[in-house]
Amino acid sequence: MEWLSESSERGAARPAGGRAGRAPGRRRLMRGMAIAGSLALTAIAAPSSALAAQGRAASHPYGADPQDAALAFDTGAYKTLTVTVDGRPLKVRAYSEVCYVADPVAAAAQQSGIFGTTTISNTRCGYESMNVFVPESAFTDQRAPIYFAVNNAGWMASYIRASVTDGSSYSSTTSNVGAALKAGYVFVDVANRSRGLTGADGSSPGKAPAAAVDAKAAVRYLRLNDAVMPGSAERIVVNGTSGGGALSSILGASGNSPAYDSYLAAIGAAGIDARGRSTLRDDVFAVNAYCPITDLGNADTAYEWLYNVLGTRDATGSNAAPQDAAEIAAGFPAYEKSLGLRNPDGSRLTAGTMLDTVEKEVVRSAEAYMKADPANTIPALGATFDITSGGPGGSTTKSYVNDWIDVDNAADKVLSVDMTKYLKFVTTQAALKTTPAFDAVGVHGNTTSGTETNLFGPYTQKYMNYTEWSWNHNDVAGDGSGTDDTGLTWDQYTARKSTTLDDQIHLIDPMDFIGTNADTAPNWYVRNGTRDRDTSFIVSVNLDRALEADKQVEDVDYRLAWNQPHAGNYDVPEAMAWIARVVARSGDPLAAPHHGASRQ
Image (cartoon, rainbow, N blue to C red; front, side, top):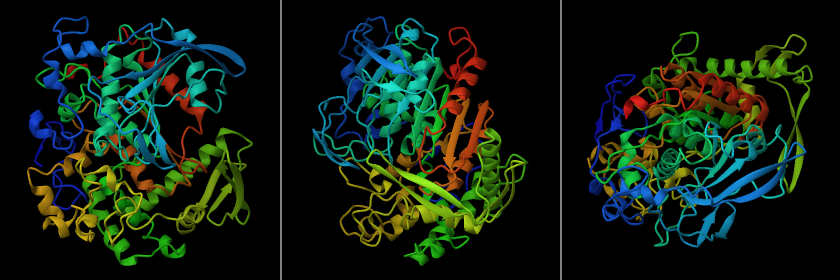
């Protein structure tokens, strides 16, 4: 697939091989495509709504596009719930399963997920709808922020869920739901297609970029109905963890990019006219992302480099394929150099400075933790970290000797960090992922891995390798992926104009949109736990540095969260205080100029 360079592109075109998993010049927006040519991934399960829309009524209160008439918000279709927040009753209006697209993709009744097979009741729109919860203080408030929650785990499809239920109790110090309701925010649970979804016709209609397209469609629905819905679509704060953190990031980075228009048209999203042109905006106000599993085209490279450069895999007995790990890691220096990022002190962020950069972030995290509360102390060298893990079914506490960080708790200062021992500490608690970590299906005969490989490829195909190394090492005959089946190397395959795999990778990667003409969200709060081994710390560091360099971005609050694993919403008071600050600073959403308005 060829790319169209943006006039405000942050850097020059990448050298060949500079970014693993992508053709040269990857940080570019795609050329506008005719609907018929661009729906290679969607033709099977998604009807062409643009054509169907031509037969609808041409006159309605939602503008010139007749398709939008079907997406009018029903202000009276709610039930009143009573919940308790911090011991006090609160009335909440619940608008249930609001379908945010005119032509949703039908799903099979039986769905297989992380926790087994489930039966869904809403096969028509259960993966493309939202639940809207309005606290009493916001019943008639069109200025209230909208807390837009995406609930994906591991980039898996997210069926509609209800975070607010009648009679439930919440604490605003531990529950982001309770905190949002108490603050008077409209809380929206957003479902979306993604990997693992089975369509009614047996296909896989959740392949990339479906999750991002659906999230954008939900934003457009809120904008279309902004005048009649409680809350302000100019104050959308997107919250997500893991795969949801990644989805939040791409939604926040790619505001109003025309690269998604044909995909939006296919599902009947609001604000796409009969010619496939955008008439509404899908940029958002703020992103609240935790441990984002993002930059998937390069995630394996960053992972293997970090956990091999100091021998972490060997030290933890998790280097089952050392040659593979070394080959994948070898691509990291060129990849990191190609980004052209800098640290806050102005120094270049490269493979040569990355370990020092991560160490400084660990130090900053530890010192912030100690300064936050006199009761917050870090074990002395030789003492133990006592870490409790588990869930509702039970928890366990294990002790790990602190042999890696020396601190002065009285002075709230870190004296030293041993990075070799630190990375071993992180990966002793949770075993490292396989090699490769994110694109393992089809490699060395592996057909059962749960990696993100099945997020890519056409709807009719179970999976497709999306990184250069895995593509060239695929050896599963007949899976339709790799050199063995296509007769083409990665470079040859992605160089073809008809290839859509590189489009899929591009359209879910925030790094491809930050610093470009896309209307990137002005406010970002990003956290990644210091004990998180699910992706490389490099990924969130790169995201932060890219955001800091984007002149559109006004506020970036990034940190490695002290002693946290792969998780989210563990710092509710801090995150909600940040949201309140950026909302207050932005002024009246009904009077202030809209972010991204210049593109309309």
